[in-house]
Length: 165
Image 1 (cartoon, rainbow, N blue to C red):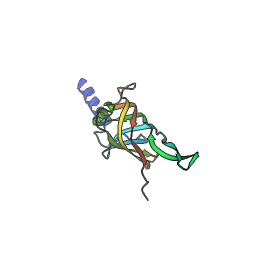
Image 2 (tube, rainbow, N blue to C red):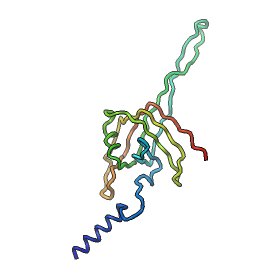
Image 3 (cartoon, helix red, strand yellow):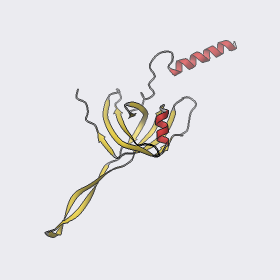
Image 4 (cartoon, rainbow, N blue to C red):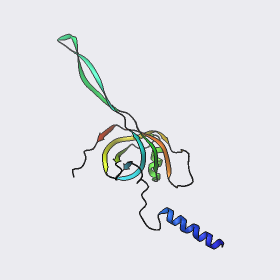
């Protein structure tokens, strides 16, 4: 009887891990996927993209002391926040947990529609993590490393053009 129970447990574990067939894609149910070096490293259900802000520099022209002119200054990008996410890439998790101590990385963030088609793709350059919370309430039902939220500080955030169809 014990032998049958052990075999049933082994079969159930093999079926739930995807070893018995079908492809296992841990990011399929997530609408936002973060890529590093062309590989998906994390998925998120919610992403807060900040507005880009530019400084305005006032100056006076030499011949007209009563009028101020305006010139564009430096651009600033806020921090991107990924919420309710998951990763199975221990290299990415270790990089994110470094909180900026490690090398900066160029990442790509893709937003998908409900049919799995890419709707937007953002190039994120020289990113690092000023804040990372990898220990939300954990459940014994999965083996993934959960991310409650992660903040990415990036030098630039550029919306990539959509591919022509």
